[in-house]
Length: 134
Image (cartoon, rainbow, N blue to C red; front, side, top):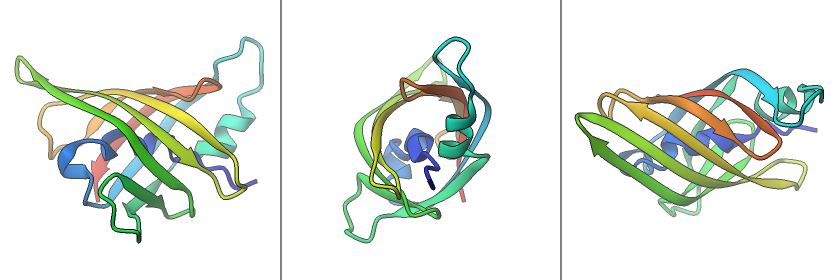
């Protein structure tokens, strides 16, 4: 089950300038949202991270990971507050086993080009995420 959840790819992927570029997504502190549940599924879905590239279909809101997963940016909300960029994005993530999930990323950055750092959840897993241009 190669479910490296690109859910967080989705993260910065939603930033306007990130739509058309390759990104590196890194995950840490993966946990189950369900109390007392083993976080193994989270490690299987996300691992330590992955790279993303624009999807071959050419749509700006689609990405593909180096693990073969697809990411559709459902909602991209990046705004500037007192000099800090704030991201609140939603993604549909398709895994290589045919399953899919909706993931949400909440992250901040000091500049759009520097990358974002924050947290994510897909309703079953949660953790820290960083997203930066490759």
